[in-house]
Image (cartoon, rainbow, N blue to C red):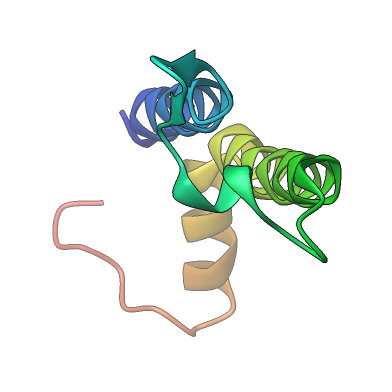
Length: 86
């Protein structure tokens, strides 16, 4: 369940940031894309692309974690109390 939610969040994050650079009637969905460092929109695009890639990879990485295995390992170390009936 958590993998599906995190994968969906990653997809939404990428789509939102990709749409931020589509010109809409001469305006940008992301106002920061029209200016930037010394008015250079290319610098803003590169910065946003790097942030999007990093954040997206972090969310995808969280989606790939085997949360059940991690919980079992932590419980076996005594860091988390086990649930009744297990």
